[in-house]
Amino acid sequence: MKIKQQLAVVLMTLMSTATFAEEHIVEMLNNGDDGMMIFEPGFLKVEKGDTVKFLSTDMGHNSVSSYVPEGAAAWNGALNEEIVVTMDQEGVYIYQCTPHIALAMMGVIQVGNPTNIDAANSAAKEMKSKFMMSQERLEGYLAQVK
Ligand SMILES: [Cu+2]
Image (cartoon, rainbow, N blue to C red; front, side, top):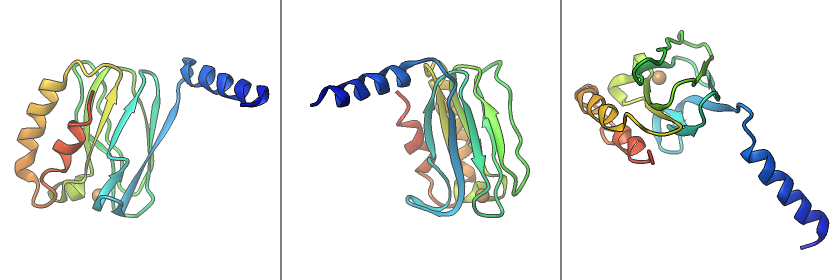
């Protein structure tokens, strides 16, 4: 590697480990890589203080928290509208698209350490009875929590 390239790599590493709050994008879609009526990405790992912006890419969706860590703020996005949520509390969050719960249009966000993973898994178990399709989707996202 040339010196310039090495410098670029060092700079990029420094930038990615700096503690600036990042904005992450989740799209609300009718069709995604992993199925119909889906958040993409459905699993997201972020740092405390980061924001997540839910984009109303396709019409007819919203983002509403269904389970948040103790002390964390819930959110309730309107249909067809984007919403930005600041993740200021550590733990695992589960959210839904209200019109498409039966199609398991759900998502998971891990913020920092997953201190509440057991409680999140229990909450997900209770939600499962509402899913008519893609019943393994939410479990699949939670399995990515590390
Ligand atoms: Cu939806």
